[in-house]
Image: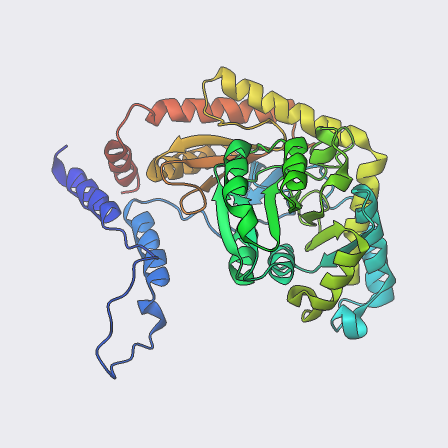
Length: 449
């Protein structure tokens, strides 16, 4: 490749090869010459590089785009209506009149804040109502609701496990699981994604060396759209004397005939799981997290989990909204059926077009795996130009060379929207599939001049 454009792209590819690593150790600073600059932190240097790379390649930065309407099957970005595949609103409940009314009523009764941690002066009846509904979903004795899903996961793990214990988790587990395991001080072992043979090998070799053990995985993985064999997980936790914690954040409202989660989908008694963890921000169109289990562990968390004890209680309006969403989910299983039908349609059409959807089951979360980061960014941007919003997922969010677009399907997408999106992805990939990343970037630079 020659000419000015070729030189630009050569420089761009050189930048990619020299990208700074956020994990690279800094050299020792000279004695008494202390570095107090935030912009010298390797994490910030990596962020800066990524922004400069996007600017040089004439690519839009896909993060923090401002949406002008509520999340749903459609959105408005920069004044333009797009079909939206970047929303967790799986059952199309965001903005439902009954949910809005419940939230408004709770605000009138309790205000916009409960103004204190629940342990001191922030407890309200609506909190316990939501927790009872969630406990009933998992046939559990009790439940505790956190005002942050991430903090709920971190606090639960860090509160129950310690330096004499061991945690086994899927290698693709959510960040809150990894951070919670790290903060607990327990020994941490991860196993290959959904590979329960590998987990059993680890349990055989490691479990006996520790006091307590916990197995943690997800009911529906948010990046891959697949999940584990729950019955075998329950058998393993019994055989090796472990606790089992399931992150059901993306499975609630999605899996099972009534959307109750992976246990319903696989016809497994939910009592075999010690801790059911999830979030309120997906199907339940709120904000926060929850843990359901036996009364003793919930009592312990309500007295000891720092993300609960030392944080203000969930606003009553949020608790009321999620409680009403759960009631509607239970009352209208046809929403779950429609979501599942839409998801299966997307997966079937995508496979027919030869798109790489990995091991996705075809329930709400379906990736289209591209591989190279630059190609993925270009694909996302060109799809946006064709009227479809699908968010690119790049390393370190996924392993290297597995960059992808992640499609969230919901019950209110039309068949035409789904078919149009798949056709647009396939056509756009055909435009760039057999062209080198260097050539793609060269064209991108030329188009923006």
